[in-house]
Image (cartoon, rainbow, N blue to C red; front, side, top):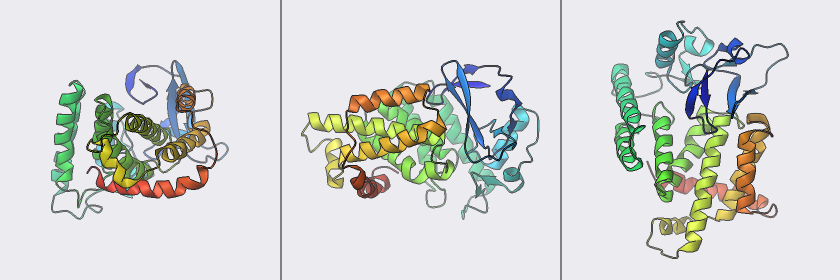
Amino acid sequence: MTVTSLGFDPLGTCVSTYASKMNHSCNPNCAVIFSGASLSVRSLQSIRAGGELTQSYVDRTMPTSRRRQSLRSVYYFDCTCDYCKSALTCGLPDPPELLKTRLSLDEVMNLETEGMRLYSISEKASPLEKTGLLGKAMGLFYAIKDMYPLWRYPWPTIRHAVTLAQMTLEHWYEALGHALKGYFYIEPVLYPTTWDPLRTMRTFLLVKIMVEIEYNKSQSQDAGSALGNLDRYQINWPVAISGLMAEVQAAIPKGFGTDSGFAREFEQLRRGVGLEDGGWISLWGREREKLKKPAREMVD
């Protein structure tokens, strides 16, 4: 099995006689979580007593053809799960039915391959070089954005890498734009379970970005800066941060466990931010609606 960090970055491999008993499904009901040297299995949906536990051996956001290809080449079996039989990815139909496009399926797959080639090269590049390579990859899909959904593989994978690169460079405005796009338009589609560990981790990254923005804005009054451009959205940052942190906190028991490394990291940030529970709860719904405008406008 692939050992991952709290952020689901691959770290190495391990042998687990426990988790290795789980079969694959492209619509898994469980996820495997690592916290240091500890492994746990978390449910992604309701499972009847005695029901089979399944996990996805591959990236479940890949379209059917790529999932099957990966499973065949690495695990030596042909997947016949319900999703593969019906050509579904994350519960939605694969192209060409989904994409009303002038491109053939082969042309779409070639775009995906080139996008992932640039993504792979970027993994060994410096943060600045990485943003350039990933920008080229993003451009491939931006050119057909009217026909290519934001959540379609590999656009979300590349966008997440862009977010991390922008965070490393402390380009908080750009990082916020990409993270908000994911929060509203990508993660709910790919990971519909609200406590899905990947969805929760992405929300946690959005919280970190907002904390940095709130701090940097408090230190600078330069309205002409990139962060100064956020003023037009009139976001109440403490309320937004508190609301998102409440969502993460609610997901932790099911998604990670209250004694997990992620739970401890979250608690450390919560205490560091120093936001108190209280009147913000009634304001979060309105503030969340306000965040949809920058999610639409800030980046493509």
